Length: 231
Image (cartoon, rainbow, N blue to C red; front, side, top):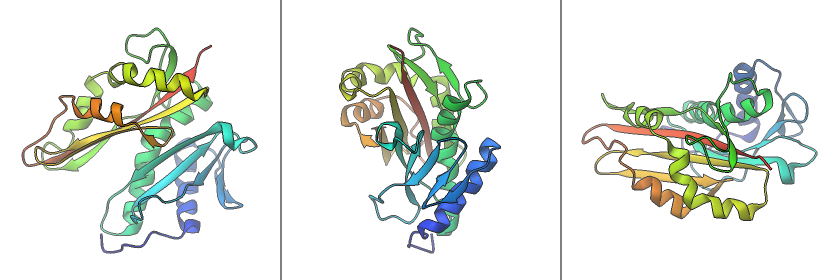
């Protein structure tokens, strides 16, 4: 990337508004330092915790009147030849995963993401799961390997045993879980974040799975699990 300075917040917000509008076919616009969507929904920029120009901290707020209890925090990094390209890619990755899950929560028609009941063996025991999209990227012939692996394996029930106790302690009715992994045979990353915070144990479980690690290519995948309390 030729630029190493993050875009001004005003520019990022306008990019977010345009991409949110296109993805949802609804009006999203910048207002009072945030992106406001239909009803009470909005998106705000969080505090940048990395200093990287292509990295964004984003908060999906379901009710702007009650942000303290309705906010799903997330972070995402993009890539590209310029900071504009990297920022646009970061927003696209976020929309394809986190965005698809939240849109589905709002629409509830199966058009944006899949639903798994609390007793579904493919889901997350005790919670209704809205499984966001699975996006992948990388380089070389095997750049899709991690994404294809994630599509063929049930990540939610694998992570559930190490997450359930901690989730019960949150007392929240909505829990957002970002899952990101990939790399190569010589360098890899595996990260699970719960409501924006790294969960070390779940990340270690993810790192121990047999997802592809190509010798020469790079492959990454990201998805988002939105848990809705059922009782």
